[in-house]
Image 1 (cartoon, rainbow, N blue to C red):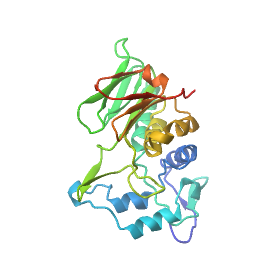
Image 2 (image 1 turned 135 degrees about the horizontal axis):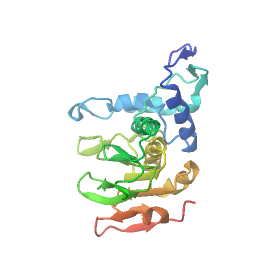
Image 3 (image 1 turned 90 degrees about the vertical axis):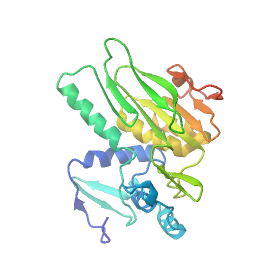
Image 4 (image 1 turned 135 degrees about the vertical axis):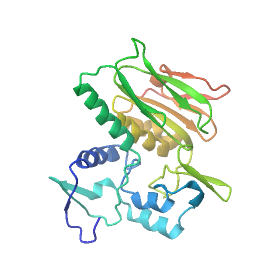
Length: 266
């Protein structure tokens, strides 16, 4: 955003994404936060090859985190937008795939298609069934190898996973991934993967990121705030956390993993 804070016209295609991002960011207590684009750029997760990546300077991280950029800083008036915080830089990586799939499914439904599935990077949204049988989606292990579980998709539903293996790099013996905690400026710790089921792929995409950042200790509370009803989280110790409704929908393939069942989310 510009230094003068003067409103400027946004492309019409971006406005719906801005509005839903503001809502989901508020529901997640800013754990899902597309306004921290400067942090994403500093970490290099914008198309640079992993071999060229390294952690940014602490001064830069402190500057952005201290400014607390959030979607609340953005004002939308008609088709014009502005920001009260000059550090706001938008990056929709944690929602763009879900948003695109929702738009594509809507177009298919307008064309009277009643049975279809669309997937990208292991994420899926489906409508209808597969020759009368439920769609299913495999969830890879948190390290990216093998299949941790299989989920059945009932009717109009999406399954999205946030995981450390999707985009990461190693530096001086430590692995850094691209799920950045807005509160610290560093990759979130405590979780290795989170899978969310929801009728809306946009919400599932954003919620998977938010609950990953919330971690094993706080995912349940944040999920309730966001209206999420199906969650499976793998923590850094390899334990699998899920709510009872998700337990009824998932078939675990990994052996010798401790499973922790939470209180219901409803």
